[in-house]
Image 1 (tube, rainbow, N blue to C red):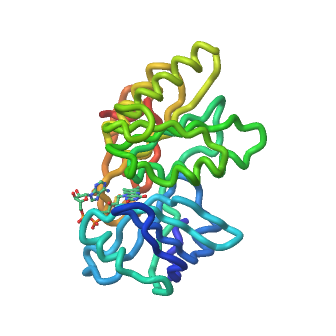
Image 2 (image 1 turned 45 degrees about the horizontal axis):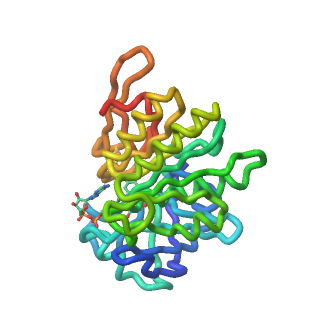
Image 3 (image 1 turned 180 degrees about the horizontal axis):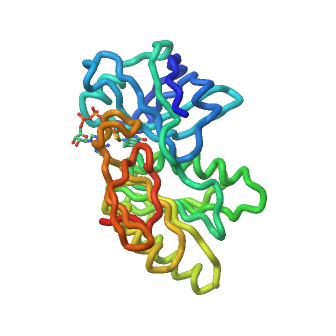
Length: 267
Ligand SMILES: Cc1cc2nc3c(=O)[nH]c(=O)nc-3n(C[C@H](O)[C@H](O)[C@H](O)COP(=O)(O)OP(=O)(O)OC[C@H]3O[C@@H](n4cnc5c(N)ncnc54)[C@H](O)[C@@H]3O)c2cc1C
Ligand code: FES
């Protein structure tokens, strides 16, 4: 059940060049949030037809009543949001959608690109809090080092972080699929099980899906689609899926996702 909560901005700061970290005092949303779910933020200053923007929940602390969002300033909605100061009131609907399972048979392999690391941090935190869970590995890629976001926070959780950059300024020079493939070969050689969890640009999501299907492992794919209503009414966010019997259907990322199984996505 989605909550529409009027809340205060607890803090709002630059996270990296072009990225902002928005911390909201939103106890109701914080109490209900699960990794992979998103909030639909009403951006002050935009006209009624274009008010809300969806963002993954980067972190949620039910005890402190805090929900955190990590976002990139890309257009007029995020540019307007970026101007909102700490202390301002803002309306947030959430938590919305179906997120990642907080469970994993084997090693959790988290694969992120750009702001796609946002839901993976919350997931890593909840996985690490579970008894008997294997240590997650985060694979994160970008054009250059400054595109790799919040790595120290992942490391502080105890996550094994492996990076790739196109210019070689951090980690492997190339795509994030290179260190991922190395790990898949090593894990399979050792006979160890794993599941893949990913969020990022479509090319990355497709590459990770192919590896999940190709290795017979579970893959959990968080789709990024333009959204308007966020609650299933407008069909702006349709993604074609395939059922086990081969039948295809139009899922809405906001209510049926944003996280889908790798083997059900029609690319
Ligand atoms: C479930 C979900 C979770 C998301 N989580 C995050 C997050 O954690 N952090 C974050 O920074 N962003 C996230 N996004 C993307 C974010 O919603 C968009 O970047 C934002 O709505 C853009 O608003 P704008 O008005 O600034 O840009 P606009 O002026 O609407 O567009 C500016 C540019 O951004 C592109 N754009 C707009 N919406 C999207 C989108 N959904 N995906 C990709 N490109 C888009 C446009 O095509 C255009 O090129 C998420 C989107 C979804 C659907
Ligand atoms: S955003 Fe309206 S149906 Fe998904």
